[in-house]
Length: 205
Image 1 (cartoon, one colour):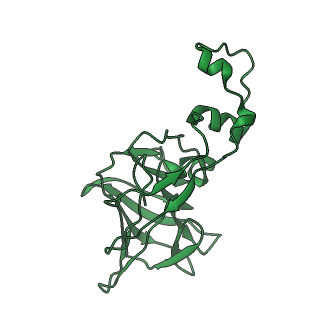
Image 2: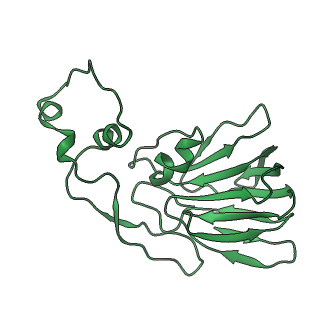
């Protein structure tokens, strides 16, 4: 991910789950224009934008109405937060796509991007944000081979009464055996261009 400021300054960072564009002035919206692969898609006012990986699709992006993306799916996810427009649906993009966001107008205090809720970058008016998947994936370690659907049921405590298992493997699996709620990162290199390392399932912000 990189932020290109109007004065030509470029700052870069990476995220495993998501990069979230937020406004500092809680009483005002932020006006943005979004594009994909150099093509304009839409512009609107909103409280923020979430640019997520499949790993982050069950985190902040999920809370804002984004879809759950299976780890095997290579993709990038763009989710508007409280947008004031008719077309503000989440967008699921290809793994080689480039998401672009131009900050057109913002209230007092400016805007900022938070990477996984841990690191922030200033985003002035007129800045262009570019988000792509990194070249190398992150290696993840798991304690067992529980399917993602089973981990999803346990994480969100989903009601599954009435479901009839279609195989002996499904009948044999017990959610209590899944001791790992989320993947553990065993290694996460950062590239020389500042991009993040996606998980093995897809893109990264």
